[in-house]
Length: 460
Image (cartoon, rainbow, N blue to C red):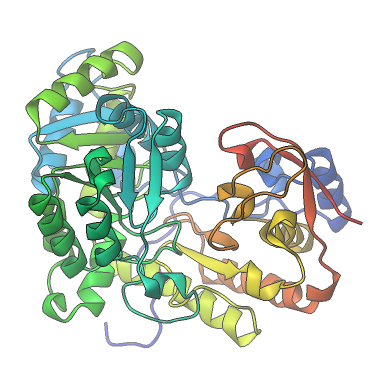
């Protein structure tokens, strides 16, 4: 439709009440959880932008699929439908279901990675990085220079730096690289897309140096949408066809279907290599379940199959990306620095620029996370030194992350424009309170993925 207003391309069939809390209550809740919003109860959060993973709304057709679920242990009809949809979309020879993305990552790390290996990527996300580090390998981020400039509104800031990638592959360390992993869209880098040209050139490098090429394709549909809007050769091309082409450039993929599968649970690992697939299935049986259900109920497989059909609806993708862009425009008008252009699934605040007086080891992003919750009951996620930095030892400061970001990740088909207007008002209040914000220190942390469970306290 040729109107300026882009409406939500759905109507609401069932509703859930939003929790409304007072500032005093929110302060008490945050103190109780030692300033870590991961510990908050859902009934203590008004707008939950912590993650877009598994938090979206399913369609009526997906709910119908739940009732159609076949719970046979092996070879269920739900598995057959899931396999058919995934193969049509990706083209891969072996389809292996898992209960979520990090299970796929763990299996991939177990069968492909050995101690001392180097895993290059445009950017690894937190669980991907942790699984490879647990396997005693070194994940390396080789983001393009445009992606390193947060305020640069370039079209494809998720691209890998091809020169740096080839430099690694042709060096002595190249023998330690089992595969190249491309994340689409680039979550760590601000939800930024990767161009088809970049993917094709990565494929060419992998062929030249005889390396396997894999995708971390959690947000493949959003990436394909951006390609259809920004890459000259693909403008106007069908989004599903673009996604199919992207999948067929690679030798396999890992996907959390809690994102662009419209699922509340689920994942998959897909491979073309027969031996790797056999190794993966053997490990799957040991820890996840039989290869035709992989830790999922039949009803979930059925709902995911339907979700993978719906996700490339271009009306939905237009609304989805426009919602984030709308919030970004509001933020910029208040003087709040954000990663530009706005990502596909989330808005990213540049905490380092916003709070230059709070050093990385005092977690400026976490200061913003806590303030957004205290101001308006909005839960968000720090993606800076708290999440990605290397913990200091013997009283030394942390090794900082490349960027200090705060992610506002929007669940799919869940919030309307008025919800985003409310979030925008809270962002305006955040800017007004800027000079009052203080840093934080960690009082207790785990060795891996500390940001999920760490305890912090505000600095005086």
